[in-house]
Image 1: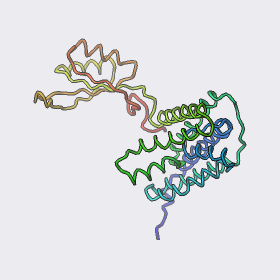
Image 2: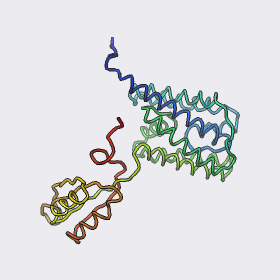
Image 3: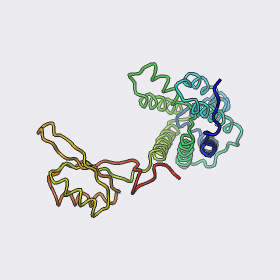
Image 4: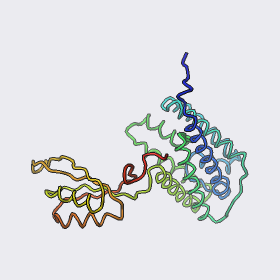
Length: 289
């Protein structure tokens, strides 16, 4: 018999995750009940498909979402961790309950406003559910199932195709204009989820290859007070050893770094890229307190 270690159980963390999940589910419900469903917008996902079915045959959105989600969950639960699977099942059932038990009416009949506000609410809500170590299932589970059957197809491609099929199907039921608005909302929701999960890209990452790398590094550290790491490299074309400077700076400091490199070695090889989130000394914390 497996004994549960209650002393090692982090009640504060679990309660925080539960709160994030429930608030996120409520925001998702508001997006559908006040903006999407009353305005005949189906921005992808199982709930979007359930919205279409609701207008075709009158089946409640929450009930239809559960009917579609539960078989997908039963097929996929073995690939999830026990805690994540339990929380996801709870989130999926709670969302279905909220959708059918809370009132539903059009907060606005302006489709553009409904698209923007609904997409933003859905994105924030979904991100909070994910931060609460849960998922509402849906097309993610369907994509995972198809990916196991056809491993040569990428998960992202399958998910995109499924979402586009749902949005396109909504066009036949609600009209092309509503389908286009639903597509915009789908894009907005995905962008907000990624932004909240990965962080706003405010940092820039420099890779600098130069024979004067030591001098460039000293100036970056002295003038910008940014850390610099020297990586050992070897040019496969020239066959010579070289030093690669690695440094992360803020967006506002990009010009200053370029100026330093240009003054020290105008022929230096520089790669500048975006760092979606930078954690550590001088930047954000790895995790909130």
